[in-house]
Amino acid sequence: MINPKRVILATVFGLIAGLLCYGGGKILGKEFTAATFFMILFHRMLIGFVIGISALRIRWALHGIIIGLIVGLPYYPLIFIEGGALAYSVMSPVWGFIIELSTSVVFKAKAVSG
Figure 1 (cartoon, rainbow, N blue to C red):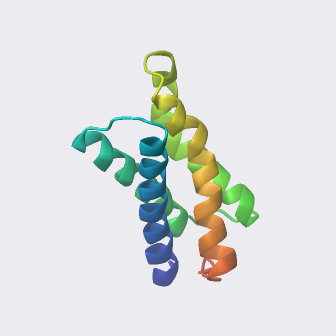
Figure 2: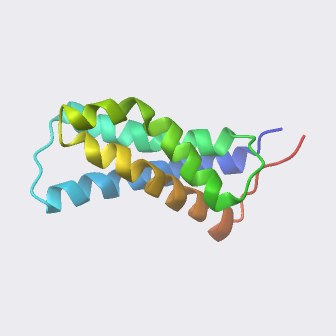
């Protein structure tokens, strides 16, 4: 059974992670198109959503990292083509950890067993 509070919180934290990721890129002098901006938001929100609906029964920290790795998989081949993809692939597990930390530890929205 899915905990709706967990799904919503994790997705919102994904949105926040996307905004922080975008802001970090801007601080580092990166220029983003509108499409890239929305892709960043969508990708981090997707990590949050998948964390929220996941039924994996593993420790919370590892859970966030694994979900970040899995959701980031499509970006890994782009590392060799476009340097910007490095931020997506390397940071996906980091953001997954942070989203899971915020959801499970700070707000205590645990997965519900069914």
